[in-house]
Length: 204
Ligand SMILES: [Zn+2]
Image (cartoon, rainbow, N blue to C red):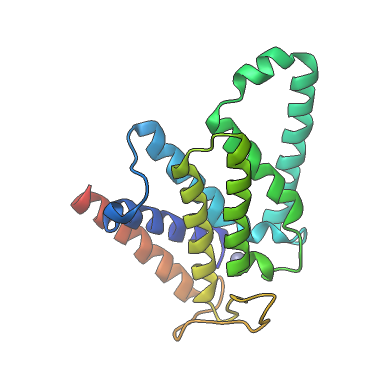
């Protein structure tokens, strides 16, 4: 699936999570800020698995952004460390936490970042960070939902995903699939956008 498809899929999962299954979620969104943060985290999560290759536009783009951010932050810290620490709140820590995986997810495209192992490792990573920092649960969950929606989005393409990588290197795919970037994908993305509008108007 192309990046636009993954974003539409991520938003759909996000909208479905706060409408259809909101009562089963371990958190509830309280303010406008939290809604925006939740969907922002979903957007990042929905693109994260494709940052696995420097060959991809997304990989190169994210690598450049992450490098500039890291250099900028180190500079900020060196120039005015007092202001730097006052600026670091829970949301900023979440964003900083997401910079690190960008440097480590590089692998051959569509391998371990498209497996359940990646979802589990992301969960463990957030748990570890939570020992020292406070990262709001809705941001962690948003990111996880985004990643899952991405894996599902590629699961319904012809190439499929190595769900159980590295235990099984087999690529699994859904019964009905389409080619990445095809007319069928565009049709699906369009239907997802319509489904979101319908869900938002009828259930929120
Ligand atoms: Zn992908």
